[in-house]
Image (cartoon, rainbow, N blue to C red; front, side, top):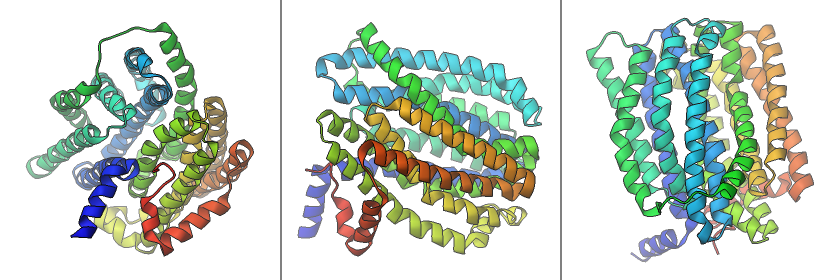
Length: 450
């Protein structure tokens, strides 16, 4: 059929569609399998043990996210704005940078293992974090392969690597559900180490076409470190912003409160799939457009990206809010029904998250990591204050109320900052949303497709 052949041609010629298919699929499978894994773990782990798992995952997610900020963001930016003659030096320097981060973060986690177990009232967490330090060493190598592929605008290998990593872990938890009555968090960590050892060779295979001989460049290393020191601070603050509600619940209330709060956050993570996917593919293009002096294109890409994301997010949030009771019963069971009211509030987060994320990657692409760092630290400070006061006042629900207030204030601040720096506004974003609903085909073309 003609329309099928046209669709194939459009797919092959469009960076947007081709890249989005892999990044979106990666996040769908990663989050979808993650949800299935959650469905199993919430049934095989006691509530207190599950609360410990949630805290461990927050530490793990922060370590991986900071690695991406410190290593991947500088690599993507400088590889896409530099001449090909500099690429070997950039990739070599980036690999050294990742080794330094991996060793440093592993030592930090080991040093914080005992204080965190005391802070979160969880004695078992200390030995679990020591085991995670070993996993972190393998994650460093696994991640560097993904970063090199992404910097070269290749996403296929990343898709398969994450599919296997999450899929094999899900199969392990499923095996535990049927053949073991009790599972410990330490066993889950050890299984993840084994899975990484199995799939690292596959990641090397997909990275091999981009690998060249090693070439040390002190100049490139200084450029990467200079940019990365701001992006890692930004990402640390951003991750803290996203986890501060759970952390304060663990310290001000109990680990069981963390467990009750987690189902709502888990569902919110599914809503974030298009946000993360679009951020991944738009960042290299933003860097290239700004290098070419196309500030107007960069501004349009920022606004249209928001429009596309929100056109997906709005109906999803509304549906989840309407059927919150049924969704909690389905994924967590009657024991967690109390999370339904939390879910209704956290779904509103999804309407604010895209603004912060897209503004952040635009500031990085503009070469303003210091401004982005200040923006995120300000938001984090607001969130800590709001969560602390609201949890003391409202208990478990206070974490959701406090975070929502913080997101609202960060939206106001972010829009002022975006308008001041590169002339963006909310009006074009809403125009794009209406256009997408009225003309869905308009989503298939973006400012990056010429």
